[in-house]
Length: 98
Picture 1: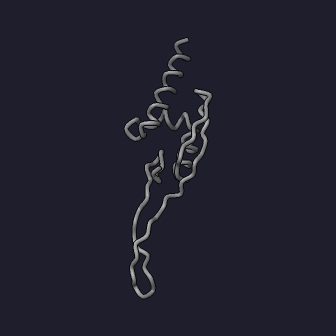
Picture 2 (picture 1 turned 90 degrees about the vertical axis):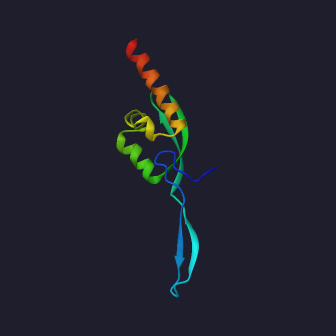
Picture 3 (picture 1 turned 90 degrees about the horizontal axis):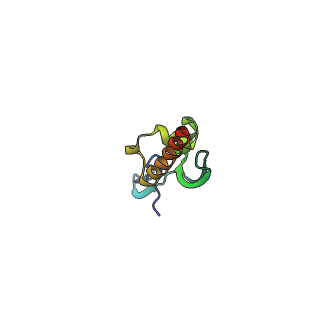
């Protein structure tokens, strides 16, 4: 499994440790990933998503998991999130039609 945020796309960066003597050794900068279970109010199910702390703040800022998916363009979402967005849109369309 890759160390990549499913919401923001943040991944591992590389750089150097620089000592006082100016010696440089390679290192990795890992993102602050959390595996969090989000509950979709529309679908009534929970989904585990690996997201960064920044991605979690973004979801909360947009008004929750469903609101985040509905207000984000499909071009910016990964494939799994696009499928969830379509399910939510279908469910909402069926609810408004009935």
